[in-house]
Length: 110
Length: 109
Image (cartoon, rainbow over all chains, first blue to last red; front, side, top):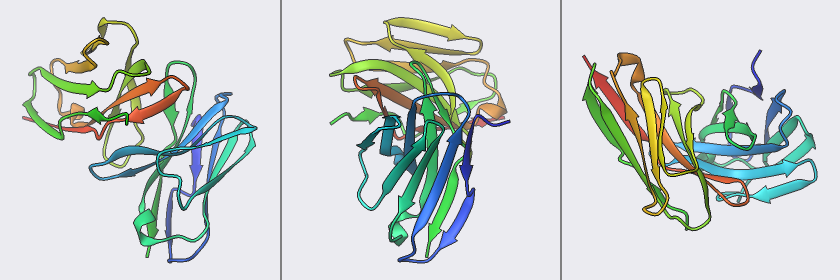
């Protein structure tokens, strides 16, 4: 079974719609992250959380919000999706020395 | 800023050796990571360096010079399956990871 899971794996939506991407982990890590990946730009950090009561903005948080419902769950929301949010989104957890990534969610905003 | 630089693309021949370089700004440095990512898939961990020197793990080795803000990933005995993107990531104090743009490696027969 996968240690970090993401749902949905693929999503097509329209401009202005609200979208939630969900992430769950069974690794028992306190630290969780949301990244987006665009061709040629690598992984860019959207939000991160070091424990259930801790939420921090990353490099590109505008247009996004997150919720840390439990140690194992970290959700990313797009309140009003726009086309330039079309990207591959990854959730990750980490211990001291390594990050573990989910399989990714491919989001297309039309 | 915390810029991390890598070459965009590299090409090498099956069976050869390739070195992928990574440079970063040294302020707040607290560890360097290399990940492999096949197209459309999640990154997977390859190596971790926090002290100067070479870390060897099978066909893959990673080197770090903290004073120079420099690392490289060395891939030996290249195989076709090594065609992928290789991501350099730096952890800064506060446990924030910053990723480079990735190097797309093509291994040719």
